[in-house]
Image 1 (tube, helix red, strand yellow):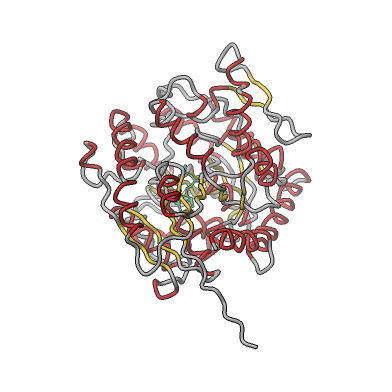
Image 2 (spheres, helix red, strand yellow):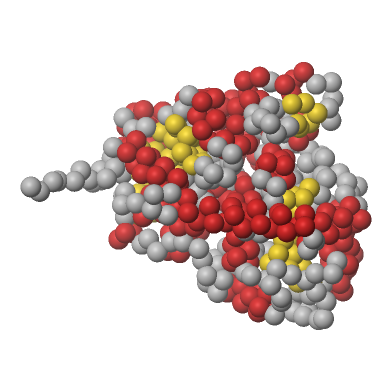
Length: 495
Ligand code: UDP
């Protein structure tokens, strides 16, 4: 007897306008399409190339079920300069509110488009946390709505605890540490200063924006997490209990189509030359001998701090691949120092510190056998990429939920060494004023890096835990693995 299969539901995926979130959300779309569901990714013109690039890497052309739609971003209406369509395009704090206003306005054209979508209206919306209007739109369409935060389940669990129990409001100072007992027997403590904007007293974002995001996350039907269940000591299951919502860990999502190191990278601006330079340099190094240093898509240190770090990097005994963002805004003396002490910008001397100014092909770098350690700002994307490559980390959190990710990496998973940063780095969102002084000195950095790259028993233990997690990350997305099954659940949810 013939059985007729119901058509798979149509999922509409709408990333938050933040580079790393766009990357991860598009990868979720690619995974859903690989599971046979038609997917529409809604973005804005300035992000369309990044989205298309990602879709192509995953080998999912529109013929394979993904449609990419770019809807104009109402930036001009909100008073933003041309092309300012992602958080990392916002040139100054003064324009931040306008950016969130524009993000709110973006809901209207998206809803108009979704109402008229042919041949099929959306059966499920997966929206980045900044798209707070997505829930109302989903209700109107009669579709369930899932939120995608961009960070992991452990940090989401911490957020939920902080929203519900508010221990941060009972402390006497910004530096007093308090318990966030979400994952016994691990001791989880933070200071208020280390928390994301939601929990700060003064930030550059108005209360109504933060309230809107919280209301959105309380209203949704479920939460999609870029993680895998085995990684965070089952924090996803605990989060489901704490929120009463479906929590689906579907990652690590970029494993939907790992790019080759020699692919040209449209975000790099330098095309494949930069990638070739990195690979040629890495190829000449011994296995696990290289320290990779990078602080995310936009992480910048004050010049004084960058110098302390630089002095540690050029004096350490391992080859270092160091990615620097915003190098064009560094003072002349720092730039001169970089030119004389590192390899880069056409200098390829005998030094062992290769500087990449701008965008580096991070995933393939981490997967290169020469890389033995990663000094990271603990952004969730970088954390997961390092886990999936089996590379242990030295942790230098900057802001947002990165102090929580540090806790997970160092104490819960045992695959990292803390540099010992106690204060966040200045950031557009957190309202922290730029510290001219460096919090972390050269010797402190060297101590952490020595531990990380150490060949002894402690270092070997970290490496072996990292290797185990690498295998689990891969298995999660294979047929029958936890993330594979959660992607199927998400599709069923929409049916
Ligand atoms: N990334 C990259 N090259 C760079 C900097 C960043 O490929 O030079 C990618 C990285 O692989 C990750 C994302 O950008 O996927 C950064 O995300 P993460 O969550 O680590 O940090 P954020 O940028 O949000 O602070």
